[in-house]
Image (cartoon, rainbow, N blue to C red; front, side, top):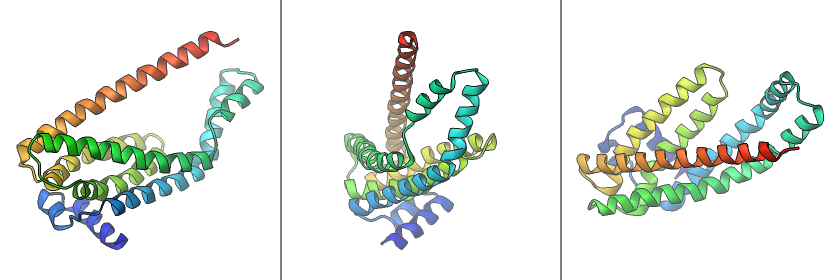
Length: 209
């Protein structure tokens, strides 16, 4: 089954179309989740490899700002460790995937879609899992990595639109409506989350001794 998903990923990534998704579509929620978790584990391994460099970069920035060593050590300790990142990534992937897939499924049903939840999850996992690994690799590359990651994100949005057509059996126009609504919801969520974290950071700094 894993090899079947890999073959499906190669097909939809290199020949993106609703027809390609249909050809490789399966109604299998369990393997859709397994595929997403495998990608999360790979990302965890990549994080473990780049962890020392990341911590070294953060320490160098703090030292350049003239912060005391004890403050730097305490701040770095709050970053967690590789194991917690991997485990958190796995559980976060499972919960996050189910929430996102569920939202897309409900929107698709609202527009008259007849596809099953397992089919939709399979279709989305075919491209989202390898793209997640690709973005993790790109993010580890200075300067150029951001551009590559942005390109993969845009490509992922387009593939989501195609997967909605196939997984929910929707015409192109209705699938586009679902994709637009999903994009708006995602944008609002990111803005609210970013704003909340900014407020928490400011308050934490304000109460710091």
